[in-house]
Image 1 (cartoon, helix red, strand yellow):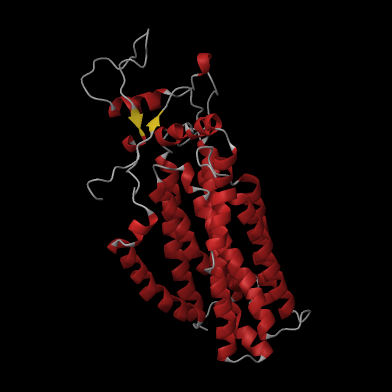
Image 2 (tube, rainbow, N blue to C red; image 1 turned 90 degrees about the vertical axis):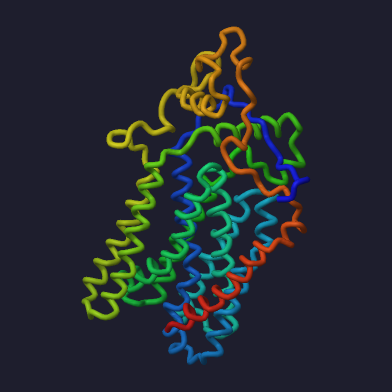
Length: 396
């Protein structure tokens, strides 16, 4: 950051804030994880490429054409980003709920010989699936991370890990439950994506302080200020760490279990019943992961989302922890932490967003585009991702 550039600082108003329901925002995190699993369905192409090649007598060039078209539409995400920024997650979730299930069902009907298969048709179906995958990826993280402004790294780890683990999950379910029958497998993927999309449409919304482009142009100054002041509560009320630990432990279990069972299935010559057991265990681990959003109170203490809603004068029950957080931020040595009875705010200094999170990059788009760090990241993706796709889509 250059010396003449100053980060934008936002003063926070912590008075009369409504307490956030942590059960609700961790439920959104679970829905986001489901969307990331749908994103990983793009890697399921390798599971059926061999069957597709035999059924339609395709060459390696045909398979590369089909997969390349799907990849192109999967990474053609800029239009959806514009839609998301201006209207929020609902339109993108609608597209994802339509594109991926329709592409899956068409591909399933092709394997059933109801639709006559060709390279062009298979490429179109794969393109619809790829477009749906990137749409699920967009709404999974961008619509969830704003609910955890002080824990963005934890949320990113939890969600993006499922994008990678989903490939192994899809393979395990494919072998264990569908006896390698491609049509049934694609109907299952379509059903899962449809359920996930409906849940996203119903529940996934941006937090009030995260204004869309439409809101920025159509709301009055007073209405925008009222929504933006709710950011203070999301910064001051820290999410319970034990819920994140729950998710990290389950991800670690899946990271160890899925490769081990894949090796055993591939080289130990296990029976189909054993393969089914492996798939059942993987699904159960997913259900256990979803338990991080439940309102546990017996063994983990009272959830932050529980308790009475309001008290006299509009104060929020449980606001004492926020007052304590603010007291730590203020200068030491001011005496008692109790506010002055006549003017409670007289002895307090302003609290800003920089007291909770690091400052954002203040540079313009063109200035950031010329930084060495950004181009180093581009180069890393260029040399790694290309080889990754070559291995994944040609493993069969």
